[in-house]
Image (cartoon, rainbow, N blue to C red; front, top):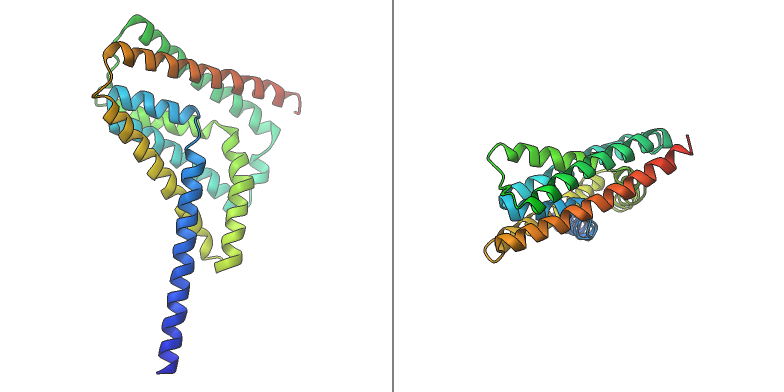
Length: 226
C-alpha cells in the first residue's frame, strides 16, 4: 500500500514538472513571437487581405523553419551553421525576399489594386513564411543561444525527456500567438475600409522594406568576416 502511494506521489510530481516545463515553454514562445518583426507584419498584411487562413499559414511556415533550426541545436551542428560563411548569403537572400514582398505590396497599395488572395495563395503564404524564417540568420543565433539554454535547463530538471516537452511548449506558444494574431487580423477586416486597408498594406510594405535594408546591411557586414 505504501509503495503504491509512493509511486502515485512520484507520478504526480513528475506530471507537475512536465506540466511546468510545457507552460514555461509556451510563455517563452509567446514572448518571443510577440515583438514586431517581418513575419508578424506579413501575418497581419495577409490576414487583412486574404483572411485568417492566409495569415496563419505564414506563421505556420515560419514555425516549420524554426523546427529545422531547433533540430540543428539538438543534433549539435548549430555552431557550424552559425558561421559567417553561411550568415552572409542567408542575410542577403533574406533581404531579397523581403524586398520583393515589400515592393510588390507597396506597388499594389499605391495603385489601389485589389490583391485579395485566391485559393492557391494558401500554399504561397506558407512558403513565404517558411522562407522569411529560414533565410533569417537570427533564427540560428536564437536557437544557438536561448534555445540551447532552454534545452539545458529542461535536461537539468527532468533529464533528456524534458527537452522535447519544453521545446514543444515553445512551438505551441508560438502557434498560439500566430493563431491569435491571425484571428485579430480576420476580425479587423470587418471594420477596415478599402482605403484604410491600402494604407495598412503600404505601411506594412514599408516596414518589410526596412527589414530588407537591415538584412542587406548585415549581409554586407558579414562578408567582411569571410
